[in-house]
Image 1 (cartoon, rainbow, N blue to C red):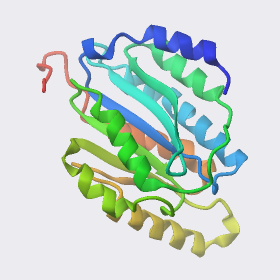
Image 2 (cartoon, rainbow, N blue to C red; image 1 turned 90 degrees about the horizontal axis):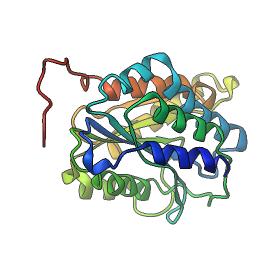
Image 3 (cartoon, helix red, strand yellow; image 1 turned 180 degrees about the vertical axis):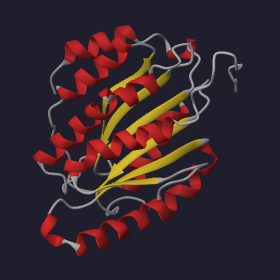
Amino acid sequence: MKCLPVLGLLLALAPAVAQAECRQALALALDVSGSVDAREYRQQIDGVAEALDSPEVRARILSMPEAPIRLTVFEWSGPQDQTELVPWVTLDGAAALDGVIAHLRGTERRDATPGTALGVAMADGVRRLQGQGGCWKRTLDISGDGKSNLGPRPRSVKPTLQDSGVTINALVIGVDDPATGDIRQAEIAELSSYFRAEVIMGPGAFVRTAIGYADYARAMKEKLLEEMEGLVVSDAAPLPRQ
């Protein structure tokens, strides 16, 4: 992976998270299992960067510097394969957000095991979020293009996470091939139902879909806007505290 100087700048810009009022801790979990080829990996990483850099998402992230959003990004595949791409950073200004975007755009694919350990990714994401105190909301945003095939099943993991205070949302990615027509729609509907039943949890949890990785940036942008909806309050409103 390259762009380590950018990552160093990113960390330097982030104040100590324990000292910051935080309106949302947001963890983005990206599927890099064997079903994701090199082109799709690039579309996913660049799609996150594009979504974060969209005017609408930027405006929402930076709307309350006195109560900023904290962000981390990690990849997941097999049971022992979760890798942090962006450590926790407080997005309290344009420079911090720009640092995240630049780092993602400069990230290169690493070797990863081919399995899909979705249950492990859920538990790992919740663990990361539980370390973020003082936030009004904690959200795991997990992307995936297939069902779990290694490790504990999501349906077994989910009950152990219910009392964590974390909301899990999902971005389900369908196949790219337009020639599959109705089959493609049926497959993404089935996968969405799987994520809805076994993965998402918490108040207002939802599933968003992308028709292939080429559609990922649009879906991620809409998902981020929905996740941050209702977390912008007027200057006259008192800041809620845990």
